[in-house]
Length: 221
Image 1 (tube, rainbow, N blue to C red):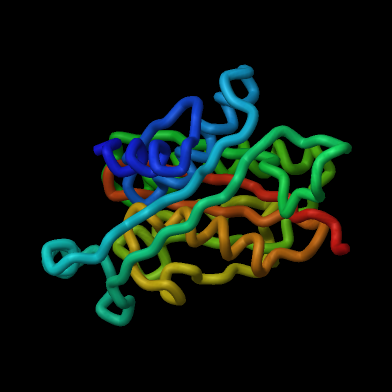
Image 2 (cartoon, rainbow, N blue to C red):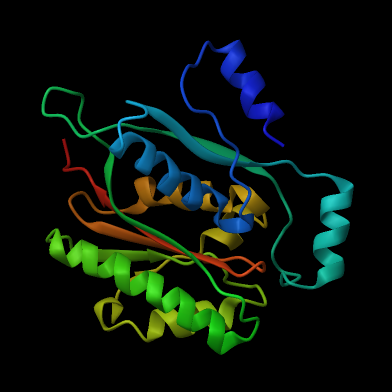
């Protein structure tokens, strides 16, 4: 599973920790949390973090057969990588700061159980943003048009800190791209977020993994 990332590291002479995190549609957010911890613990100074998904006839067939994605959502593929490093006054201006990143798991398969788990992750992420004085002005949910949409909406609707905050559907815009979805959401946060404000990214995978992350956009130049 990690052959692709290993080959890329060899070709480009990357050094240090190299891992492939497989956590469904929240893989990129899981990788973001993993890389942040490696940097915080001193195991790396800079990490490349992202998500990749390749479209194949088998993927398209399986996705439609499961019926977890609305027919109006196209099945596609994608890839995006971000450079993650410690904040530094001497370094170049950061596009964004990772204010919070929570990844949890629930064995519950019902809407209520999944909504509760995501709500817990959202509460932790928004609390961290509040402690940092970050105002969340945009939410990028990951499950619009899927069988998990109701659980995600319930979790977001129940968070007082998100009342009236704009939501943008990334999945419909880029298509169903599996493990790359989180990376597409991260890229969308950089493109759509207001300078100086926070963007909340959320997701639920059919496996039971849930995630919530807050990026604080850098000040306008």
